[in-house]
Length: 288
Image (cartoon, rainbow, N blue to C red; front, side, top):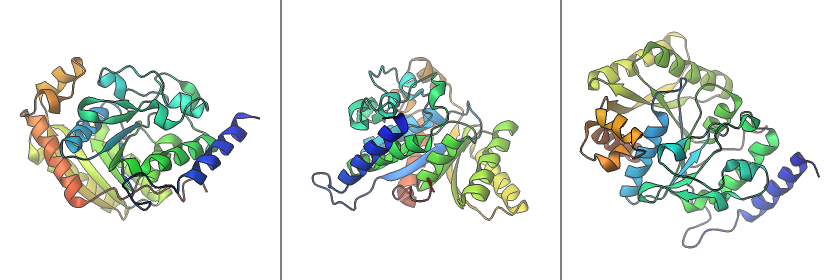
C-alpha cells in the first residue's frame, strides 16, 4: 500500500477510537489549543512558548507543547533534551504520538519535531489528516496544547494556526518583525477567515514600547480594513537572563524566577487564563 493509503487507514482507525473518554474526564472535555506564531524568525517564539508552558504547569495545568515546525523543530534543543523519536516517526507510520512524548522542565509534555528534514516542510493532505486524528486522541489528556508554529506563511503554518482555536502572534519592536507580524495576520484574516488574534511583544525597553507596537498594528489593520480583533496579551522586557538561560539550555522562568522577563511571562499567563482563550481545536474546515 502507498504511503497516502497507509496514512488514511491509520487516521480512520484512530478517529474511530477517539470517542473513548480518558479516565476521570468526560468525553466532551477539550484541551485549550493555542497556536503561537510569528511572521519573522528569531523573535523568541519558542522560548516564550516553553516559558508560558512552564508557568501553566506551576499553576497545576496539564500542558503539551507541539513542535509544529515539523521539518525544523528546535524546542528539544532549547531545553537540552534528546528525543529518541520525533513526529517524523509518526508521519512515517512507525510510531503514534503517545509513543514519542517526552518530558521537559516541570513536567511539560513535548511532541518533538525532527530538525533539518526537508521532506516534511510541506505536509500533504494525508499527513495533515493523520496529525489531526492523533491530536484528537490526545485532546482529553491535557488542559492546554501550545503549538510552536514555524515562522512565515507556509501551508504548514496556516494549517496549524487555523487548527487551533486561538492564535497568538509574537512580534518585536524591529520594523521587519512588525511588518511580518502584520503580514501573517493579513493572510490568516483574508484567506482563512480568522478574525481574532492575540499579540505578545518581545524584547521591549518598557511597557510603553509594547503598547505602541500593539496600537500601530491595530491602526494598520484598520487602515486596510482587515476587520479583525487584536487583543494585547502583554510584553516581555529585554533581559540578559534570557540570553544566559538559552546558552545553558534552561528556562529563564525556572532559573531566574524573579527576573524581569519571568515576571512578564507570569503576567501573560494570567491574561491567557483570565481571557479563557483557546477553547478546543477546530479542524473541521481545514482539510476541505
